Image (cartoon, rainbow, N blue to C red; front, side, top):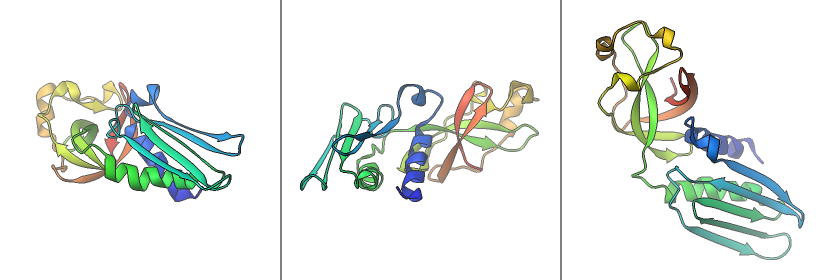
Amino acid sequence: MDTTTLTRLQNWYLTNCDGDWEHSYGISINTLDNPGWTMKIDLSDTCLQDVHYDKQIDNGTFDWLFIRVANKVLEASGDPTKLTTILTIFLDEIIPNYSDQSFEYEVYVQLTGGPTKIWRPVKAKLISEDTLQITRLPDLNYKDIRTTALDNLTFDKEDIFNYKTSIQVGDNIKVELVETFNGITLTARE
């Protein structure tokens, strides 16, 4: 499997990790004894959760693959040479053509203007496996702020409104995971 394809799959997985999703869902890749590959991707709570997809190629023992998405799960299998093909179909065909553009991810963006490193939530939609586009900037609420440690909060509730973000609706962002005081948080990459 080439590094680019694997990196792209890792990025899709990371984009969906939010401190909850990864505890219930994920990706599994295994081998078959006939021989071949099998892959399962849980799509629940992602922009692909409502996809219905079916693709089959059956040209004999060493040229076959089956990909089906139903009940919020992508199930795929293929001959020994088809793992990259299966991943490419997922990344280049299913994600860009079947993503629900009304599905919003919660992403935290950094606020600046004070001594404390803090993030606030925004809403975004998936553009590609590793790029999100900001769709909404909800009202800023003190209880939604994230920081690496509660001890880092060196201001009172009113000071939060002195912090600003340069992110605007329509901006494209890349994401990463940051460990904040209340667990793993999906944040815009700095």
